[in-house]
Image (cartoon, rainbow, N blue to C red; front, side):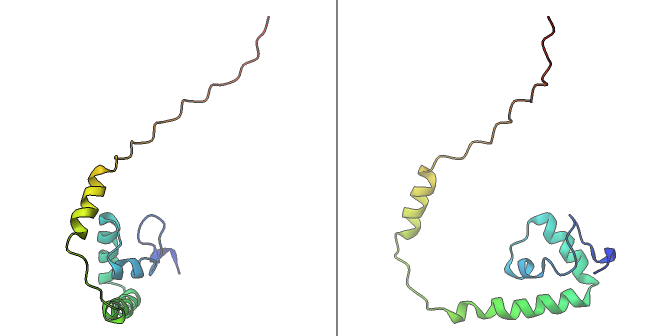
Length: 101
């Protein structure tokens, strides 16, 4: 792949095709890949192949009935879980200086 195949953030052509088909790209990545996809037949073909697979996944598994109170219980747990605090910045490293007497 040439430098022309770069999309954003050092990614190369086709690298985000699977994540795109799964709906797993961050908003900025999604927009960049969509712009790239308009003009790239190779990525269009790759995305189409992935979409055939992802489209078949729900039919390939056994479906189970979910207990009616599951959502309520899960949301109770989510609300009860403390939110993570942002990581504090480490103290700046102090430069070492010899003590001259």
